[in-house]
Structure formats: structure tokens, C-alpha cells
Length: 309
Image (cartoon, rainbow, N blue to C red; front, side, top):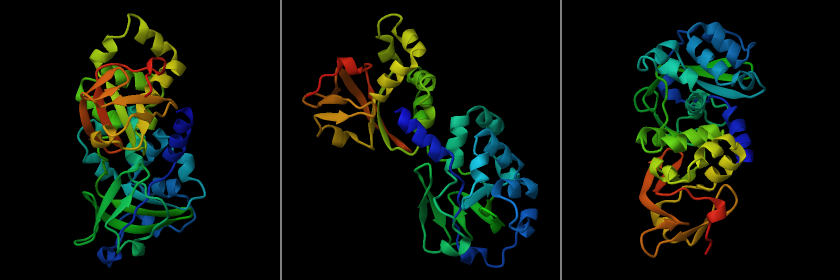
């Protein structure tokens, strides 16, 4: 999983990309000072000098994407204005600046591979983002990307192009979001953070997670959890043993006798009476996230306790 963390980190160091339709942009002029700028500056400098992307530039710096967006590229940036960020609920921006994995997730949702100008999008209805989720493109009335309206296009930078939107795009809840909101996976989320796997499980995936509840962790012998939180290598091994690559829904799980985990070893699957993953019983299935699916189990499974069929 350490290698996957590296891979996801490299993806996370990608860039924002916008695609938009020419028909909706005909006759539309840009109100930003960046519209008249010559392509002498990179994307970050162009956005910074425009005057209406201060929040975006701050977010890019906080997320550690500055050097990437100053790189060779080319990149296309789907750029929310300061007014777009101001439309978020009070305290959201401040919260995101403290939750960098979540911030990176949101920024990556503004990324589609390739440097694409407005004239190239007329035949598209959706585009896959670097996060792995799709954005929907509607050119029937103006240009809309999900709920955002494109207000200006093709602002040139020396390493790409910026397009302006009036709303921040928010991806579907990822695995971390769902686990956090559920209220019964607090220990699991704490362990994921301690193991340094948050960015990975916010990444493109998709992943299938067999998620032990707080009650499942409470069944471990006294002191086990505290010990694991101090031994991050062993903790990562156990957590990645709960993750299977791909989006494996319940209808597919019951057809399997075993599945290879991200940790590298197999879990056994017994669907003869209910569904058991090793010694754990699946108590809830198919909780779908933007980057995978969660199945809830009632016990923590560990590689040394596996029972392969």
C-alpha cells in the first residue's frame, strides 16, 4: 500500500482541468484581468495576478500543488473565483485548509487529463476527473459543469489555459467521507489517519473496503489498538488487508471463495450462510462511495488469522 500511497500522491500532484463548449461561449468576454494577460506567466502566477482567484491560489499552496501547476504541463484549470468559494457554507474554506486530504480531493475533482480548450468540448456530455469521478457537462443553455456555470474561457498561460467557473465543484462522498459521516467507524477512521492512508482512500480507486465497526475494534484484546496506533507499519498491513482493489458489490462477493487484498494476501469468503470474510460476518453491504464501496463487518480481520479456501 505504501507504493499505492506514492502513486496516489503523484496523481494528487496533478492539476485542474476544464473542458467547455464553444457554442455557449460565443461572444462571452472575460471580466478578469487575466483575460488580457499574455502567455508569459504559468498558471499559478496568472491566477495570482488576476486578483479574483486569491482563495484558489491559497488552496493550491496549502494542498501542495504549486510546483505542479508551475510545471511544464500543459494543464487546463477549471478555476472557481473568490466569489465562488464565498458561496460555500460559512467555515467550509477554513475547515478544508485544515483537512488537506479532503482539500486535495476537491481540487482533483476539478481535473480532467489533457489541455483542452473551449472549442474541443461540444460533443462531450461528461468527463472523468483525476479523482476518478466524472463531471457532467451540459451545453444546452450556456455551459454548465455539474452545478457550476462557465463564465470565461481560454485564459492563456505559458503552461496551459484557465477557464473560470462561478461555483466550487464538490465530488460525491468518498470512502473516508462516508465512514466519517456514518458515526460507527470512528476507530477505523482514526486508524486510517494514523497509518497515513487517508489520501489513498480518498484517491481514484476504486476500492472495496470491508469496514469493521467501532464495536468490532472494541472486541480486540485490551491494549491491542493502542499498540497498533504506535506500530504504523503493522497497522497499515492490517488496514490494507481490509481493502480489495476494484468496486466489488455484494452480488459479486457471494460468487467468490477468496479475494486478494491490497495488502497482498487473500481473504476467504464463505457465502453458505450469510456472508463471512474470514472470521467476520458481513452485516451491511453496498454502501456506495464516489471511489468505491463499503461492506460493514463485525470483526477486525488480520492476515495471521486468515482462513483461505
